[in-house]
Image (tube, rainbow, N blue to C red; front, side, top):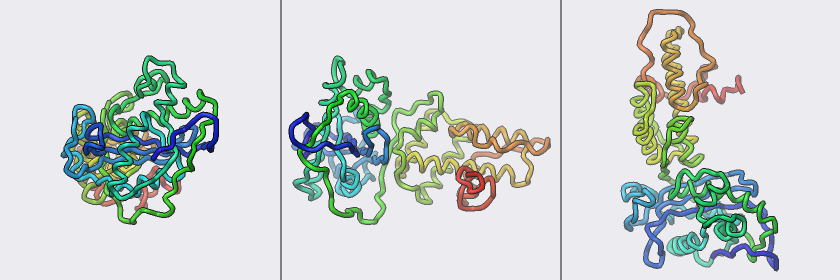
Length: 367
């Protein structure tokens, strides 16, 4: 399936885009029935700029997920995930016109060939670049494992054994490797073209995951959103309601701790959300808090402190910088997370112009 990059000789150069892929699998051998249980694909250019990310868990159709202690994926995690056959249109659309890139690419090639054949796609050819091969030519390290090269390059590998984490690491290393290599790489086959729109038009329900959450200096919510793909499924009404209710309970004390962040990550992942979808729901929650605090047109210092505490917990500490207390009034109960969650179910309303349909961050009057 893959026609690998070579040096000199015949063939064509390819300056991108690149489709960086990674799989987590039930084992090491598709010939023995092992299956893909997580996939991530990122389309990047030669400078490493990301144009698109796609990631989801994959249902192996009855196959046990295998060594959970390695990849952290249980049978429960994949139970409601799409099958590989269901994600094929999304996958092939992202491989279209690109050089496929992977670390130890022959491993991904074997599984990709087997999964595509099972889904009825045979005989595909596409140019490919193995960053394990390229890393041996561009890095003088004791070994050329992805983690070793990433450390040598000063790049974080925060989600080891998560498909999206590995894809992001390779995407960051790729421009550095290409620059160090210098000489053009040539490929003996043209980029793959699927020749049409394979997508059915029916929304694909993804199952995402955010792993290895760390509070760090930016907070738990920042970690959660950054571990998810940039964008994925929009949350349906029921999933949004569940997330907002949970967020209200979590923020009852104005902060998020580790176990609470993991619970929110699980809800977001089960709904197939990406970082943008979580960010939008968080903003919806904060705007509901604003609405509740300003319902009587008086904002007390206590209320403003409550708003700012929630904003800090959601990793947007400056969100309410446009507000200031309107009067020194008798202290009232601060706006609670539960009341904000209930208000947030009503939909979007701008905190600046008060017009429904958008939030303050995208208000036409402020852009």
